[in-house]
Length: 438
Image (cartoon, rainbow, N blue to C red; front, side, top):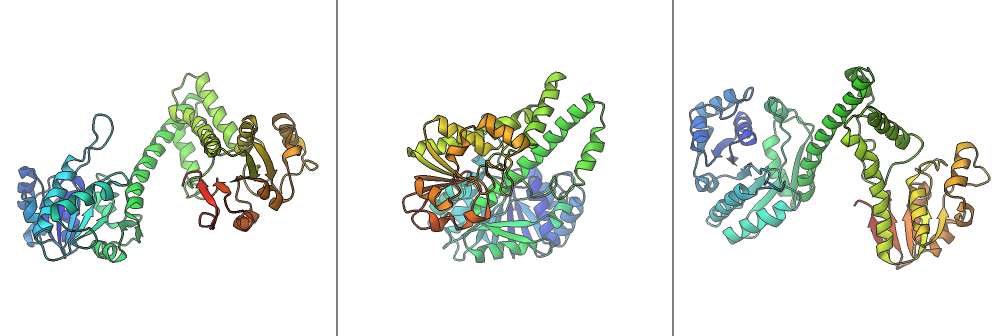
């Protein structure tokens, strides 16, 4: 397979070296003649461990060359990898000028070709960019349709500076976004020597995954720094704290809690975040991330309220009111907060939660109900079907097992607002389905 790499910055240069090592015939393309000259001389245009040796070996073997002529680079390659920069504009948006230029040139060359090349975008772009910007430019310039005259795929990179070659060959996974599985499989051939699972998704999902990963990395750095600030002020070694916290791979370093949905609640998370924030205030510490956690959580409840209000219907079924399925704990349940807000706005509510019984509530839970939701008795029902039948809008509040069969109880014309993503509910006939974050 012949491969051309457009853009010889960090990602492009590393890609060239690694692709040559894996036996591909590679042409590097860049508008900067200095970068092109360095590669043709067998030298790396970036400072990075191992990449200089790989580029030198590729040039000596006749597998790697570079050019400033983008049309030359696009003329014969089977796979055209776009890795040009997408820097920030002054307002924080993305500067697409380099991407637009290279797509225009590639499209013009595709117009003259009789085969079906695969255009792979590796530049970091927001979801919708490939379909909304790249594809239209390629189609207009080539006079051909994507999927017919050429393929388009998206392949985000996960390379860290100073360890990029190691990251290239030992990634957590390789991700290919494609509309046609066959096009994705062809693109994935560049990873034939990489010992990691190749995942396939829609183009938009692959675009989004790149941003999610980077934002999560930034979040982790910021969180660790704020933990360090609080710990230092209390005379605690922050590195010891985080080293122990990271030993928990069931909850802390794991997929747990990383599932978009409704707000958190319960007897622990809200009060403990609140306590950390208050301690920071006492000590005049600047903790914007921790300060924002509870505010962001409250906004998720407000989002649900706005969804209900926007439907302009009055009768509501609330399925689940404890903060999560399998418990009767109502303390700081965001579903209680949501219920209170809807009652305050004049909605007609009925509530079903098999784990809540006024006759069994004791201790702190009983005190919480009497203080926060004294009229709970008039709203509760033990008849799930009757509660659903009452409503114009059905709100699924937690993942209690009996809600898996909810579609059988719903009537045509009802709206379901799903806060937990019940499997199969979205596609149920006759239901107007709304997910809280999907």
